[in-house]
Length: 301
Image 1 (cartoon, rainbow, N blue to C red):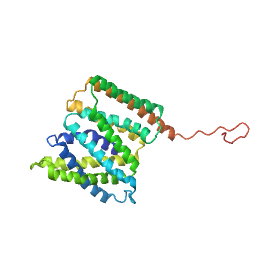
Image 2: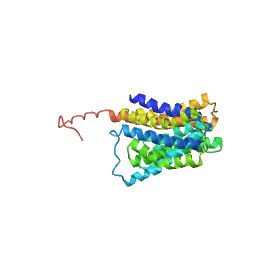
Image 3: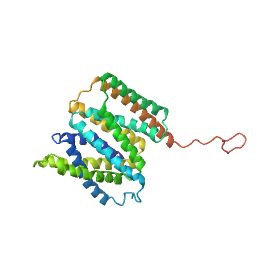
Image 4: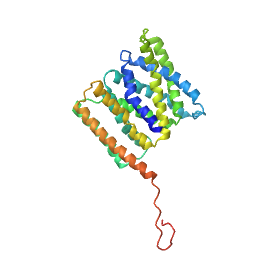
């Protein structure tokens, strides 16, 4: 079941969510974001009521829980940028951002949390940085959208790690924090987007499901699969997004982007291989110590 949950989450993020948002092309990104927050809040209330016995209670609240305000802001920025990328025909930029994201998270872990990088991991991060620099030289400009998507989600992951709250509770807190602004925007500032169209209304209502369900499936997969397996599967979503952008929506893979993708894929392959090898090494039972020549049966230290 863990594999099924993971496939459901990553295929949703890579195929279902972008196609869903492209069907809402005529709706401004800000309105979609506000609807996404409102209907996610409604859905998460129901889920908390159903799963209340499985959710870890965050009380008593700690000072670090105030960081959920920061994580809410970061995920809202990430959602909005993703919507803009998909609706404006820049799925390639979104795909690249989510390819860069794991490597940026590794770098943040080393710089902020003091996590030590293994030599191969350091080479992988260096390759990714070299790819960005080379792409800038070839194109003459920074891939701002990709880098901002990667940075916002990497920082979001860092904050959520520091907060250390249950995934469902954290998601609920973030949506509830964003709910007043989303509600006010829909009531006071958002243009009329439904206009009696039941299909469009249904698509807007479904934004709650396509936001919350993949996150729940991901959490379920994380409980059942090894971290190395889950880590390797995370590249399925941006790979699907890349194929969708080029094969279905006709985006052009320009030479500087191709160079950058090749270097990112090489960096990810090195990182994944190193993570897989490290995971296997930790699972191997320690070899029995050889008996010493002078004291048979005793371990040598």
